[in-house]
Image: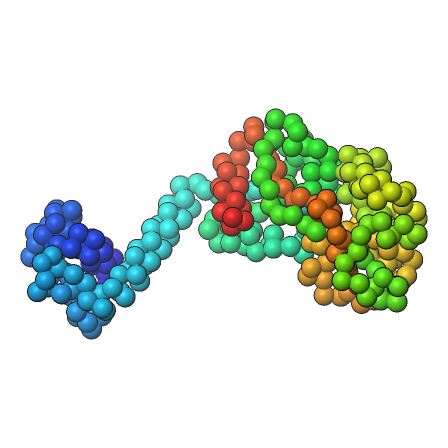
Length: 300
């Protein structure tokens, strides 16, 4: 079985004619029928009903047509990958992501991209939202995956697309009176000691203002006893029963060492973090558009 034979078979099936298919490949009808015969001998079944006019596929032919098309499509993709690798699709792409997002499916998305472009080095960096924004604006990073807590997307210099909506959850210790609930409202945390999970390393950021507004809508001022942008530190303190915290579920969904921790989703349409992929429109790295296209496709 050869790729040429598969192409002849698919075209003859489409046109329902050996003669017309032969014309498409600039060969004789005899050459076309010989190749189809050879293919049938290889697969051990008749693929065409030659007694009908126009010719038609047998049951075996209909089944094989699906596989043949898939094989040819995969071959075209593989050839394109080889072409890209041989014509300079190599280099380095610097990717930043917000702390905690390492527990998302980001690694799987980057793995599939690496398999398509094995000559491209994906350098990955973990940081707070404001540090990611600064690194992007200083061209230290090519692209970032983050909650736009710095309002970066309002700048026309940058482009972005929505990656996912992360539900906010309350982190509690098991003995807490609210630990048995299936969901909570923010207003129910009015009397709690809050371990504040901040998106930023610096106080009074745009992201902090968004969260403080949610507390204001819940009609109370939070009793914040500790503030950090480090997920692990916050969770250790919750487990030690120092207080409770609110954080996005991408920090908790794949947590395997959640001893003495309970996570309960918050009710309300606003209780989410919108994770975006953001890049500079003026970035000339030739690999960047390929990654953007890949992430969009895999995320659709």
